[in-house]
Length: 160
Image 1 (spheres, rainbow, N blue to C red):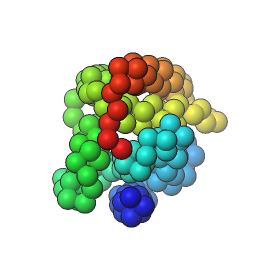
Image 2 (cartoon, rainbow, N blue to C red):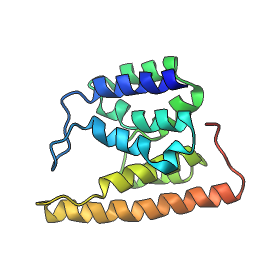
Image 3 (cartoon, one colour):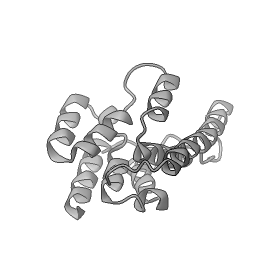
């Protein structure tokens, strides 16, 4: 599985080359590494780490279909299907969020919670619009974690 993680890092590095976070100007790939390094993701296992590294790869790629095909042909079905679930290319954010919440996919919920947590960090000089967005992300962390806990209490555990 270490080789899968290395392949995921390599793909994410290529996809996110030149992309930076808006307020910090740090390389965007740092975000996906932070999400993948969160203890709630790491304890889920190597597949969850791969998914977290790849969670923005399809939607941020210059050629989303090409990246989707690569993930499909390179990684397990669980990694591929969860990456697709976490990809937001069309529709409203509300429908995207509902799709994840109703998926029964604990890995997706915990990765999305970690992603939202990282996206909720307030940076100096943020506009009111971005501060409001951070508050929404903070609430999303609570919602995703609550749903993941509900599923885990029912005995749901994705293969990871």
